[in-house]
Amino acid sequence: MLEIEYPDHLYFLISEPARYKVLYGGRGAGKSEGIAIALIILATKRKLRILCLRELQTSIQESVKETIANNISAMELDDQFLVQDKTIICTRTGSEFLFSGLRYNINKIKSLAKIDIAWIEEANNISKTSLDKLGPTIRGRSNESSVSGLINEKLNIGRGGPFGKGPEVWISYNPDLDTDEVYKRTVVQREKYMPEFALNEESGLKERYAIVKKVNWSDNKWFPPDLRQEMNVLKAADEAAYLNVWEGHTKQVLDGAIFAEEIKKVLLDERRGKVPYDPSRPVHTFWDLGHSDHTAIWFIQQVGMEYNIINYYQDHLKKIGFYLEYLQEQKYMYGFHYLPHDADNETLASRSITKLVRNSYPKSVKIVPRISKKVIGINAARTVFDLCNFDENETADGWQCLCRYQYSVDEETGQFSKEPAHNEYSHGADAFLTFAQSLRTEIETKKPKTVGVGRSKVLSIRGNGWMGM
Image (cartoon, rainbow, N blue to C red; front, side, top):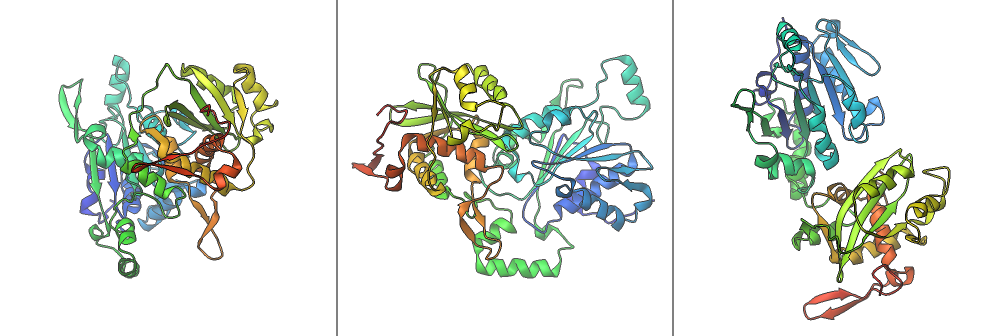
């Protein structure tokens, strides 16, 4: 018989059914270890399919597989589990652990039948698109036919999940930004997205829907002395960093964020909210292109001297026709499509991207000239933020890219360099640079001018930009 001392504040993981179970907070709380142990315990009780997810996972080494395997050994259960290259199987119950990245793999996940528990680790950077798609993908077993109902009842699996009440989605993360999608859904607007109870239409009764708990180092009775030392040193050196790292407080911008001040100003001015599409005005698109990398597109309308950013889309490993089909599906009245200088490279198709887009939108494609230095494009973007209104819902993934667009870290000095990091967020930011560069010439960008009007400032933007000035 398995006996283990398990933390009281995490006991709900193995004792109470709920559609969503969320653990968030600072470091040292034992969130990942506690969840791994809970999953192992449940896997030894009944046959389960457990899917362990991260937003981005390019190899099995980036997954939580090692965390689970290490805890299996620590619990002296090696004789009951078979640790394979890509999966872990409980030989006693047949339970199976699977590991996958979430973004861009949602169709693959849909093909995995009967997932009982999906655990999203490090969910602070999960995108809105991933969250929107995951919920309907992790669905319970159907009892629509009498045969399937009898089988489920005989096997004591009910609607699936660890308690036969339906599959569960577990989420764990250390908070980063107060605008991150997962923080919005689990904390800021919890009653809207994850209420404690929800109605079961079959029974007519309310069931536990979401259990959301903030846990910190102070909840961990096994919090090690070395981490306590590290925590106290940071608290004395940088109170704000301590609150974020150890107490799970959010911050408005990340360290090294390139558009830190611009992001804060947009939020302060309340220029992020509902920005509807105006069918009487053209929509202009601005691209960053890739194949093995990501392709990103912003959808923007000019209204007077301001720019309403109404939509954003990104994907990867897709041909150019895929993105053109997406454009057509939106039913927008399009103006110009702005492509970066490398649009003629054979990256997304066997023919020039410029030609392919022009085939669909004749006389509506413009190429944004190459700039000599990245900082010129960044400066151009800084000058247009004050004129932009972002739709919070439709551009959430693009906003995440702008918030997480950071300077890279020099491996030798550990300091931020002058060059942006090239990662999953840089493509959305680069597409935004395409937008900014389309408005300004390189010479103008080096020395942006402003004209005072009372207490406000209006940017003086000249050249042959799409705003027609």
